[in-house]
Image 1: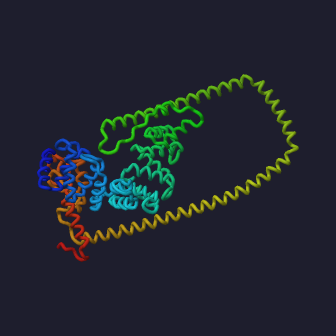
Image 2: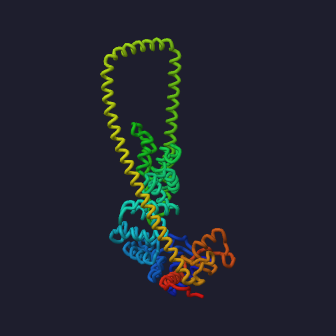
Image 3: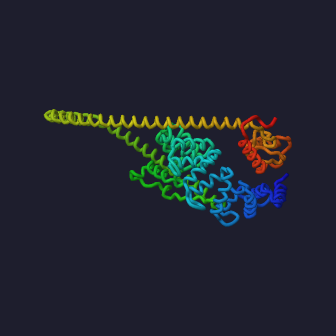
Length: 503
């Protein structure tokens, strides 16, 4: 089946009020997701179809419609209605909707600001493994927004999001490891994480990595790479990078500001939402690339200038040595005169040596007392720091133990629930042979777990069930089956303990 035919058939099902068909057809019309599958994009029609499916309780449609309302696509902007729709989808356990709704509560969009509710919603999305929610919840825990501070838990959440490739989490975790926040210090790992985030263009990570490279923290020094990274971050308007780069260029010693830095244009602020056009994005990218090129040229000019100055210094030193060799006899006579004068001065100073020695002895005694006091204070501070670190480690161990016990309890409960009744065959993925979480339909007419069939299609172009060639690799979510699976799961939770119902 080709895409145009799929679009026609979805239209026929839409005419009968089929919610999944309405969502799938809107999905094909929505240009923010697809580029004209089976025909031209139509945001107005996509918004209408999302609205029809959302009215029937379709969580994905509610989320997509809220996205269009929040950005004003396909019709007027309405953040109040977007917030309401996200609440409906979030109540059905939609992780992306929970995270987006938390953002609106945190920023006060579409209604009053509520940090506590934002933190709760981020927690729900975090429990489903959403990296962006994990990173945002960790930031709230560090700052103590919507509840108490917990830097240890924040560090754990940053780690989970960073493991999924979230650039912001990688940068924040690197900062925490560099400062020893929420756990022991680890400059080597901090340098590695800064590198991962910097490679994704995060200006704060580029600045942090440059600082470590310039100071030789967590690995060998590399001033040239540090300057290059600072140039990239400064080109994005990062104030810390601009300041640090200026200090490296010796602006504070009176050297003139580099011409390239003075002429550096400001990159236009990134346009947000689907309303930004392609030409503006090209202009921003071109301005950023030009600024980075100018920064690299400026650093190259600075290195050439420093090399020239070093060459001049070596030449001057060679001339001085040659001059000394030419005037050796005169210099020897001068040295003899200087030695005689020095002997006379030393003889004159003998008379006051005792008094000076006494003053020095008193000063030494006072210095020793002060040093002893400072040593005692430093010892106390070190002992307090060790005690605080031990307390933090004990807290982390206790929390890890609690999490392990909770996980074991959940696993035991899940095992008992699974033993109660086997799921119907229609709920089992034919690839993984496990209960499906996100069932999707393929062009061969069979249902699969989304992640399993996506992995299969990476290296195959045939159906895993029939072996026939798949002309269309597009996957469609089957919300009806997903609701049936959830209903079955709820029924299993409500079953009394006992032997399995199925023979």
